[in-house]
Image 1 (cartoon, rainbow, N blue to C red):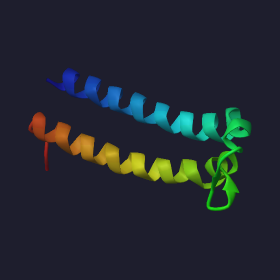
Image 2: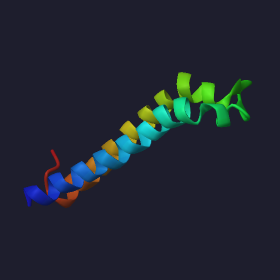
Image 3: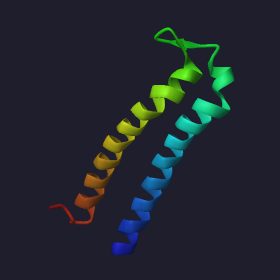
Image 4: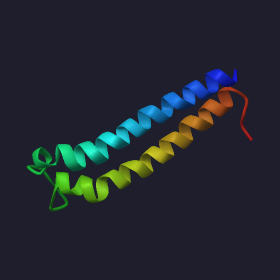
Length: 80
């Protein structure tokens, strides 16, 4: 039972951290020049992701992780 719980937890972490990596490193650095053709709030999109976008996405991912873990805790009867 514990093994299934932790395997699912690790899967969640890998997916969410991959999304964060793509949004921060990918959009903010690797694809910034391509994204700079688009604007968000008057700023080039690549610049926006490098400065603020990845932080917003990280905060959203924290809430998603909390939701997923609460759901997983209930499934495995580990809720407090």
